[in-house]
Image (cartoon, rainbow, N blue to C red):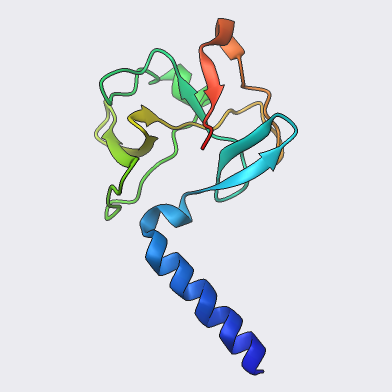
Length: 126
């Protein structure tokens, strides 16, 4: 029982120290190397056409490349920032690059979006 309590206490402390972003992404190993993944383990990507802390992926693009949405109370920290989308919703960005998943990735660890669209999409690497 005390081991379980200690493990829960340690996990709680780790989550509290990493802030709100800990719930949105983490680092994982994939066949293509280390990358950031969302809470479901799906690979996160950046898009070359995004610039100036703004997402260029809206409408049908965002259907194929769903943004990593940020909660209303999410706070930026270090390299992790919040980007306001054209529709006013918020999404996460890493080092100024908005983050997305890829609709054709069907399971955790898939990296089929890396290099997509003539190399414009890239795995978000730590």
